Amino acid sequence: MKTLAKIGLGAGGVLVALAGVVAVRTATFKAPAAADLSSVKLAPAVRVDRALAAQHLSQAIQIQTVSHQDPAEDQPAEWDRLHAWLQATYPKAHAAMTREVVASHTLIYTWKGTDPSLAPILLMAHQDVVPVTPGTEADWKHPPFEGVIAPDGVWGRGAVDDKGSLVTLFEGVEILAAQGFAPRRTVMIVSSHDEEVRGQGARAAAALLRARGIKAEFVLDEGQAIVSDNPITGGPVALIGIAEKGYATLKVTARAAGGHSSSPPKDGGGVVTLSKAVAAIGDHPFPMKFAGPGAAMLTALAPSGPLPIRMAVANAWLFSPLIVAQTAATPAGAALLHTTVAPTMLKGSPKENVLPQDATAWINYRIAPGDSSAKVMAHTKAAVGDLAVDMVWTKTPDEPSPVSSTNSLGWTTIAAVAGDLAKAPVAPGLVTAGTDSRYLAPVAKDVYRFQPMTFSLAGTTMIHGTNEHLSLENLEQCVQFYARLIATAAR
Image (cartoon, rainbow, N blue to C red):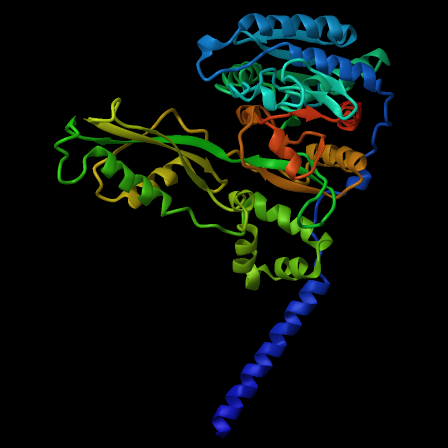
């Protein structure tokens, strides 16, 4: 009994000591050291004509630069219209900058700085929009390509993604040019024409800049935004993407003899083999880890969160399984912590009474930083085992982007302007979708992904969906952001 008592006392002492360590670490927990944003001398606010900016966004939405999966359905004349409209609408910006066209309709603008020793900054916003799903037009509050200006904003496809950024970026440049602003640091704008489908424009722009030996101080593209109801803090947070996931689609094919459905083979044929393979792939997800940019976001915001979150993150060495479980409670949260696997398309027989000679599935992967397409292929082959399927990439995968610094000139400038406008904390984040900025990484020190727009979590569902619109407050906020960012970074 004495031995048991000693063991009990020892265990109790360990628990008390452990509780003490957790309490001290929680009480003293601070966000990881980051750049001092207060050291950034911000350019002052500019005067924005909100009504005129709204009119301009409305006009841009009416130009139907829709990128289809089949490029034969595109209307190149609409891109010509948009280019002519930009030149006519922003004459002072075009007088201040040189303009080049690559890959048929991708635009590269250069506002030459007075100090060639300074690395340029490079801002991005694409011209194309996704189609409206046929048959859903009547579900829109306002027609998707009329650019209706209402009290609650400018409505239409592309109002947010990404003509909202394109128009407000040019509004900011026009304002600065009209004021006679002369940048010391060169300012560049890359506006691709096919971000939503192929990304050939951004690739061509990157190749040209690389051939010229350009290495930008930073690139800024779309990707993340100001979330008004961040689940960690309960309030607004400006999230700036410091990395984005890779993108790859795997084609999985089961070959079979085919034939008449009245005499199916004993093993069920290609469809059965394929279904087993897809199920095996889905049953072997990539492990979730409290690491990388997703973890960096949680760590940066935890000091502003409630006590349980602060305690868990401050003591991640002990509570990381709990943090992972809680974060993964939603699909969006889980996507921050691992490479995702999504079967998206299936193809079998062309007729219901014919056994297919091949059955095919397409699996889309969003590859987390730290993983690679080679790791994905090896992981998937292990999951499938000895099932008789062929697996090939539909095209060369896009690998995860490098992770950009949170102590660089680019980060401090963007974060300082964003935080001042949002009146909110700023945190790094991971973009789980894809942007054109991935192709510009070789010509920049750092790449960031942020749209200066404020949305609730529920409000983000309109992007690529029904009733896309940009509030008038967001419209003005974007113009302020781009004007002040350029004036701060390039003066």
